[in-house]
Amino acid sequence: MAHDSNAKNLRAELKSLADTLEEVLNSSKDKPKAELEKLRSKAESALQDTRARLSDAGDKIACQTRQIAEQADDYVRENPWSGVGIGAAVGVVLARR
Image (cartoon, rainbow, N blue to C red; front, side, top):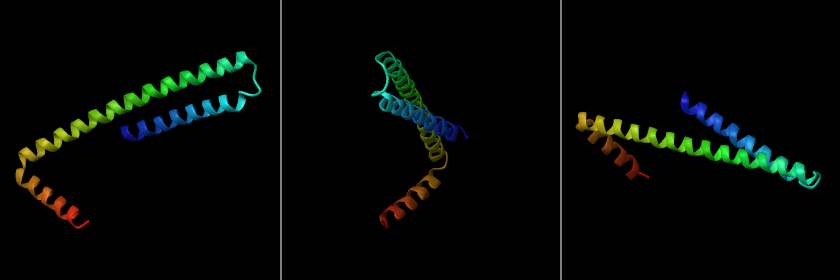
């Protein structure tokens, strides 16, 4: 499923970012300034990439949510009594909480 693949990719991206940041933090004491700049640049690049991917994932989720809402709206318009029944059932379940 596309959603599972996106979630897996996102977890991998966040792990990579965390690993890069951990590398920068752990090696900041022992490395010369030139190497620290390389690590800092690598961390900034990873952060920018992760932010872009998170933004893309958010856009995809928003698009999927709109599509689902449109499908639900179409279903209720085509089957109004089913929609009323579903709404009533949800109301009963929520009222018992």
